[in-house]
Length: 201
Image (cartoon, rainbow, N blue to C red; front, top):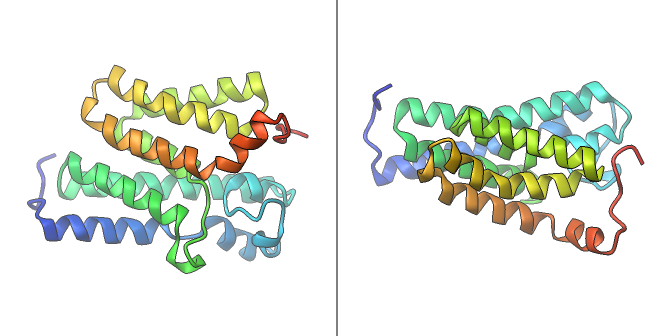
């Protein structure tokens, strides 16, 4: 698909602004409120992602949160690519990720961005995205630690986009990986101390 518009500086700023706002939509909090699950901020870790939504005991709410967090990462990438080009798609993905992690609606206190990251990955390169997901699943199966799986799958993304012929995406995947590791600082400390909660515990 040929770009519809030229990617000027003004359009780059527009892409960042729009993708950030979409990424800022707090899916977990909205779904928890609609389904009467209470204030997500006062449940479990207080995080707005699907993992914490699952702690409410409502699996449907967690699945919906996961879906919409994936969607807001993927949709901005696909739309920016359709309107502009691949560079715009990568910029949009980064904007959406930053929106999820630092949403203006929640005083810039958002989630850790793993689901949104996967949505971005699938939209940038679906084969790489699938293998990132498989890396998460395999790591989760072996370690039974969700956060550790997120860390390993994020860093594996750099390898997968290179293998599947998207070397120009390595830089943005590196940035996203660094941000994910930074957002998981406390989890990393607990993993090192062997105190990080395991899946199904």
